[in-house]
Amino acid sequence: MPTVTWARLDGERRRAVLGAAEEEFAAHGFSGGSLNVVAKRAGVAKGSLFQYFADKRDLYAYVTDQASQRVRAYMEAQIHALDSSRPFFDFLTDLLDAWVAYFADNPRQRALHAAASFEVDTDARVSVRAVVHRHYLDVLRPLVRDAQARGDLRGDADVDMLLSLLLMILPHLALAPYVRGLDPLLGLDELSPEQPALAVRRFVAVLAAAFAPVPQPHTAVPNAGGHSHV
Image (cartoon, rainbow, N blue to C red; front, side):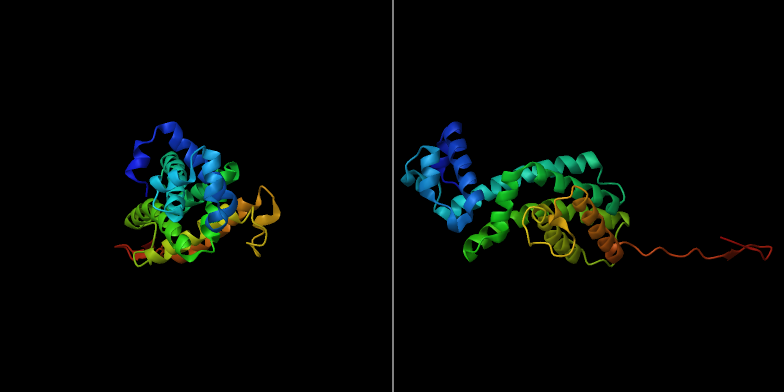
């Protein structure tokens, strides 16, 4: 995370460094990203970057955290607007639609998400995925917990398994429409505006089948006259 020196920088200089770093890492990831390019675009000496951050990986983790916070703020606003107290799987369908739309409209956020997902350097990937997962789970866990408390999930549902599946589904929906070869089954890279919405509904149907309560059949109860009623 940033040093005290970074905190003392004026806002314009911080925005210049952050913008340059985002542009470089979005285009080339951690391994291919150049601090020389970041420094040149930001108008600072390369050595200054090491006064702001401990190393390249620290800068990359910070960039990822800032990007994740923007996505999180948008999705939290959507959660409020969509009313998360509705039946969980209806709400989840609308939330995933909003998620897909966000990444369709924000190519830099999409590129940063892809860079974090596909990074080949193990240490860097572990660092940035930890940041991304923290934001995911901070938002998703309360939604799932509340859904179970309302009875929208089975009482014995494996909540961690549901969260784990969502952690796989969300990046797939964000990236597969734009990364050829990532999705071999659902047609997400067909560039059809309807295809992501269809995939969302297929994902939600599978999750609902696995985690929603099983409807109980009505039992006929005999009344005092010997007749039964439902």
